[in-house]
Length: 615
Image (tube, rainbow, N blue to C red):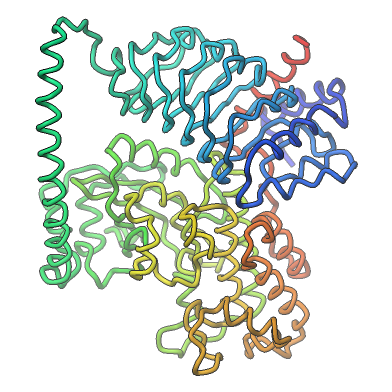
């Protein structure tokens, strides 16, 4: 194996550290125990942390925990994002004294950020507390966390000014406090270059890159009068706005049903925007404009539709040089152009063998178009459930290959990708197949781009999600997407693969059965007839044991209680063990530093050495 210079640097630094860092760290174990006891964990992610094991490195297998070395109980990073955790900032983190990365984003944490935070997490390079319910002021003490490269505090309820001392953090490259209640001037930063998006939706903030700060010369009476006037106008506007909302919504629904029978009238409105360029992530692809996409899809003709779902509609596109692509028209997004472009930059950098490559994107008026590499064998759903029932049955080895590859991709998104991605829309329609029938996952990361109103359960009930059989039961109660919800959805796909049945219409069930595929499987399991669920075209060909083991993995994925389901990484490991004799797995990237994160990983190692020297 050939190592590049960056890998050699990382290995050299690791060898240096491995001689000095202690093993079996009692403090780090105490750190994780305090987190487990101080935070409410409604979905059971932290309850899987079992401290009865005394082997070296056992905590490194805990969900969300990354260690310096797999045989060493020393925490490198804690990634506890999007787990529904509730409580105040856990002060027990002070015991994770060698930790360089902390991600508590997208939870339900509240209270203030500790004033002495530098004494709790003094050696962090990345800190993400975004999308919680933190309130109070940003502590000045944060400026003493001098190794910070990235600080994200957006989407909270923080008040007061941004401490000017934060501007002196000379390693800071990324900083965001958008969507808070902050006021006062934005500090001058030594290294970080401010952007409007990082400070947006804070009514009281001023200074570059926002509006300039001006002194208020108006007297108190003028302010009262102006405030009353604004209040009256605002109230009137709200009343009128509510009425207009329901009127236009009703008209929009009627127009959608009656005025656009071809389904692509929206495309005709783009004629004046044909010169807009398509932003491409890969230089090997020919430069394109919107006009090229229009021509390649026959003006987004309904005859070019490959499939449609909750996130949008996918079209087949053939360029003039014969290059085949796929173009996705997203559902309405409330993101601004800059926010959307930033999301696309992130998704464009997410690369894995089992993900459909995102080649580029285009913004034209209100439309958002994504360009993907073509997948020659289409959608898995169409192979499992052909429309005319004349399709050839898929062999077991092919089904198993697809399951393992898809599991590898989802496990990478959950456990290794930076940022971690919860898919939220897993189904056999989001798994595409290339010319070699290698599975490629589509629609990853797109849930964040959707209109918040479209994420409500009512969209499932109305059929806009597609098949309701993929949706985890806890979502109906919480409306919170979680990794274990993804596991449930993928478990339904596994049931499709081994039974050949659709997720909501079970052909082999009794006529009076009204449930979905998971409910049918549950009934068979209870009555001891689980083997009857397996696709008859697969039985009796020398693989019956593999089929039953596969079915058991699928059943574990769809257990009613989220905490009883395996993680996506465990699902991948189970499936890989079943298919070991076929030798169609590739070298794993899961739970290893990705190519994208190598630089940050190496810097974390360097910081750890500095931590050692300072201690």
